[in-house]
Length: 290
Image (cartoon, rainbow, N blue to C red):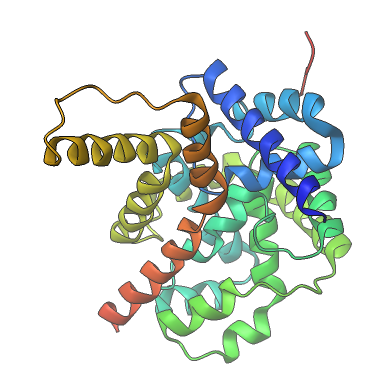
């Protein structure tokens, strides 16, 4: 993609994100949100993407946009009960390895847009998820794990090893077969039947989520802006300049937000690193235009 075209898309991406957040102050930006927004931007353009993303942000993606990750953690807790219903052997192996569910975090919160390299597969999954229940991505995640049954059971029963295997999602998956299978599992084991197990299931170490939340909070656009202002104010005070509340000019603020949204979206990688480090320590219907 030519640089000018890429820069233009980045500007439109930032505009969409800021527009949605400004209109909906109850929503909070999270690392990976831009992966979903850019997918809609590339397919339908800025105007329709804004409408789609805003509606999704208040519906399908709403739980990911809370101030904390409690609801995201709860959704991830559906993963192991689904696997247990279909393949108890794989479930017991993963439980013994204490791998948890963090390997599927980026899958869930980006609708797999962050981990699949072929854009055709990404948009195919987005079509599927748009037409289904908001929890369908977690069913699809379960189907991927179940499809890799042999790899999982042949892996060393160690948290770091199993996490590494599962987090490296294959790029040549039989997507249509898996989509069909996920739909079947949703009918066989609807969320209402799994809710009790999900509520009591603790498949994620709280320390792992704290690491991820810390990384995400440090990268949020508003946090970046506040940190920049504090640094500028400290520099002014140390140079003897009279203390004045520093207000970033629009161009500067926009540049900082761009860095926060586009250049610093590595918190998912930071989360994966935190998991590995922790392992080592452990040994609705869319009415767009009313």
